[in-house]
Image 1: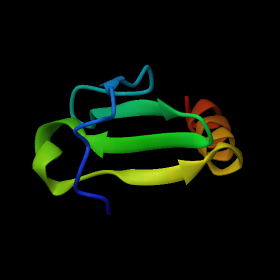
Image 2: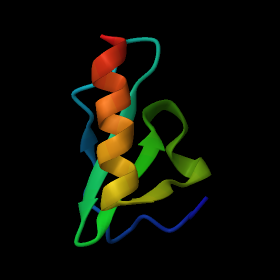
Image 3: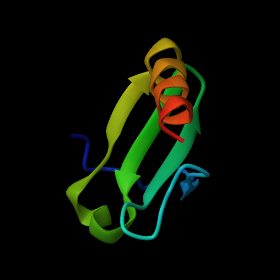
Length: 62
């Protein structure tokens, strides 16, 4: 996990649910994701390919 997110602009993910809320920041080569309720723990970085796969999997779960 990366802990420095000062330069990232996070927004609430459209796939968030009240009990499971995440925020995402768009990057030139992918996305960063963090837990809304535990922001101080840092964030995970995903390449564009990894992020598209994660979003596709989340859409299938709906």
